[in-house]
Length: 190
Image (cartoon, rainbow, N blue to C red; front, side):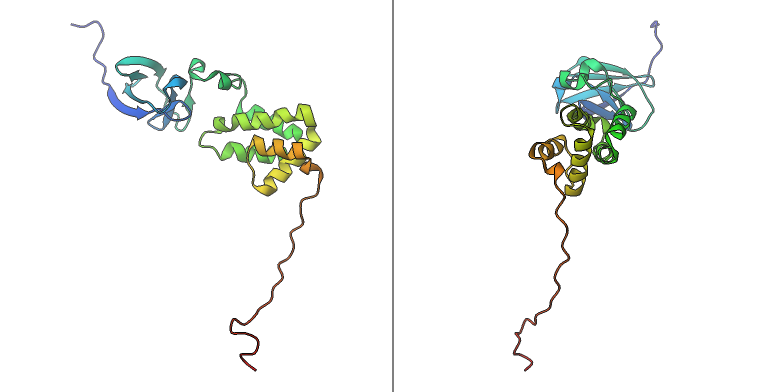
């Protein structure tokens, strides 16, 4: 008899998403970031999720039942993402609130517009970093302008600050001039 009891396992083919995670039962598990777009196989048991590429195990996670949440191993992240791992959603929102109400609103819009809020961390943290160079008042004004323009990125806010358009009043919306002309011409009814 084997030492370990039999453990039921399901197998599933998955494609690695842009955020270097695969989805298993509405939960996201990380794989090494260099496997983007690769097809992998997942072995799913009651307690674990193991991910294989061509028969070689590349990741192993404890199984989670929390829907729409990621389980991420820091070593799976590209180095550019690792520097943001100490940032949490709450911390980003708190820092944005310190800058001003428009910065808080824009950053909240950025985070909510992504499939996973973590995908908006780079833009949000970049916008918060502009405070060192331009100050809170200008960054908040630039965020207000970005909201008016429906621009939801770090690049947009940085361009607004660089061009100084945060210091100018937004163009006033003019009321449309309403008039009617007969398509048959003015003399048709005369």
